[in-house]
Image 1 (cartoon, helix red, strand yellow):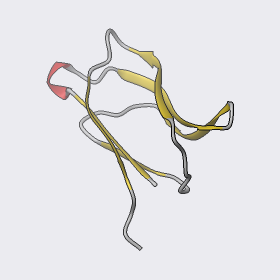
Image 2 (cartoon, rainbow, N blue to C red; image 1 turned 135 degrees about the vertical axis):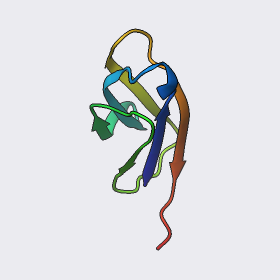
Image 3 (tube, rainbow, N blue to C red; image 1 turned 120 degrees about the horizontal axis):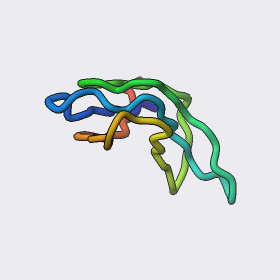
Image 4 (cartoon, rainbow, N blue to C red; image 1 turned 30 degrees about the horizontal axis):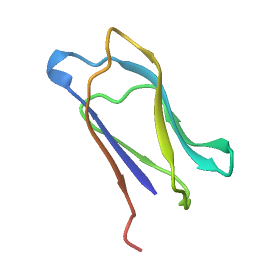
Length: 76
């Protein structure tokens, strides 16, 4: 229920808009979305069970440079 993202900030912040989705049957459903990532971005969302997830960058300055991507479960 937590998405962790990081950009290679050494060459600048590039991502302007993104979405994170999971596949429910044959349909992709939105989990989280955002505008910028920067050095590190943590997005909390309602927990889902899925076999497939996808991260799509919808808009960026130049080529996006994602340096880290992680999915985590918060401790209860």
